[in-house]
Image 1 (spheres, rainbow, N blue to C red):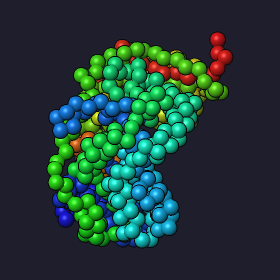
Image 2 (cartoon, rainbow, N blue to C red; image 1 turned 45 degrees about the horizontal axis):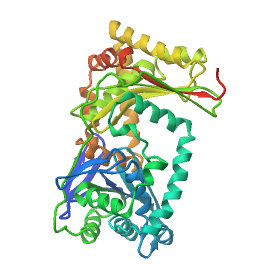
Image 3 (tube, rainbow, N blue to C red; image 1 turned 135 degrees about the vertical axis):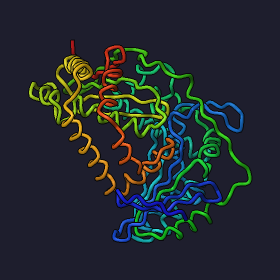
Image 4 (cartoon, rainbow, N blue to C red; image 1 turned 180 degrees about the vertical axis):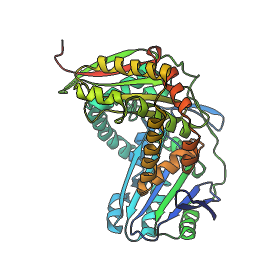
Length: 423
């Protein structure tokens, strides 16, 4: 296996591309008792239009999430009971761009890893089980529809963009999942759960060669390659489709999220780091604007801001609860314009950059975060452990230019949730 060391981070991992195509990364942590295994597919809710071996396909919204639910079923039954017997704690999630299955344990890691690889690589979809799951997922969708934060972000994406599939809910809708069949699930499993489209990250007191042996035996090289190309549509305009959308729900306080689309970047990780710094400089907890808005009672401690990206898209966002969201949005735009004209205090910028770097370093204490970040960055074509060099390369001028060109009125789209009964 190829050993890769990052002395500045105090991190080392072992990497190998297995004959089946799976990328394996193992980070030994001999002084810990917990082992964490994270198996991710480069497949998420936005992958509804694609070409499979040259043939165009379009699937209903929500297939990736539906598939995640169904993978826990195997011919011999649901795997959750078997994990319990082995002392493993499994879970899974579907995001816009990734589906991941993970398990943590303090004993019998070989057996837990074996079971994780077995059930994710075993498609088993019967008419009866798929139909049964439909009702469960429909209940989950209705729960998301009643959640103010979920509704706010879904509405934001739907007004920021004109056609990109990020506009659709991750779990789909009750109507869209009604069209999902066992055949669709099996085809998407074949297309996107090919080992060459996946990554396995394991962190803990494990032997890298032992992990490679288990994965190599369970995931043999396939006879025929699977070719998939994704279709997210034409490039989006930097100007949002709509500037504003309001909804009314059972909430005590109005909430909002304002978004500003960024141009697509060749290095999504650098864009994320620079975007987070820009929003920290603008309205982070150390900024004068945050202090003023907080003292005036316009925001509370749950207010947040940063950069979010999904494949070909990226956006700067800010939001939280507020008694007057429009005043907060106006203040954000005014402060961004001021920084764009006058610049920021260089000492403040360097202090914020050191603080942001420190937070990234602390993330490495979490096995879960190491695995997630490794897979996310790899699927984006970057290396997460490059973040120290990227931070050093980011300049104050670059960050100020982001605020000057992106956080402007013509790029602003705001999603608001008001209490029911508001006039």
